[in-house]
Image 1 (cartoon, rainbow, N blue to C red):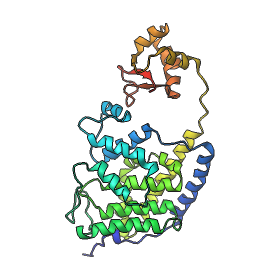
Image 2 (cartoon, rainbow, N blue to C red; image 1 turned 135 degrees about the vertical axis):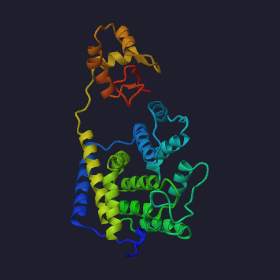
Image 3 (tube, rainbow, N blue to C red; image 1 turned 90 degrees about the vertical axis):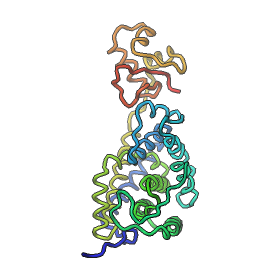
Image 4 (cartoon, one colour; image 1 turned 180 degrees about the vertical axis):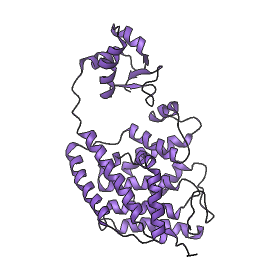
Length: 319
């Protein structure tokens, strides 16, 4: 049986597909900048944290997500708030400094860092470097990133770093979480607008395809298939941002403004209460003419945003 090479020692080659994605993303980032990139919001940070946790086997319920969006402690999952706060910090962090590692470990492992002591961990059926080499290998990744800043295409560099983190696996758990956060921060180096990419959600939905690409990279001893899969996600994600930015600007809506003017700050209202408050009789009219335009303009928020059709749904003025 042929000896399996440790994948963190694999080569990295480029093909036309990867280069095509790099060119495509560069062109689209220009479109995005022209349309106005915007900045990551608390909603973006909460969504990213949700999918990071989901991929680590932790699912937040609607109530916990509402608390997370407000920056509150999440019952039973205190690490959720830490990851949420880390995502809010991303625009101020550098992917070239090891302080990023300190920030991640403080957020993900407040009770102590679970450094990998064994050459095997759950979910890894490929050779890992021994614990004695992990620290120098991770330090080498930061040095490699800094050395190649401005020399290597930043998107390709971001993909390479993702691959290396999960093949080195410095921790017994949460290696993919570190890889995703570092990856997103590297994308932000190419364009701040890419910090808006829903990378975590897209990676979750394409988990099987990514795993297949990763397995193929190990088999052929080349990171190319995995890099190509990540580049496809980046390209598709930028398309999503462009479609969002090209939506027609929201014009003032008198019904939405009337609704918000009638609501007290911090108070949630059910549909029946709003009908009475506005002097309306039709729930359909309330939904179509008042609630929908106010939600689209982010003038109000729902008590259960993960289930818009919840029969107990309530609404309040945006905080």
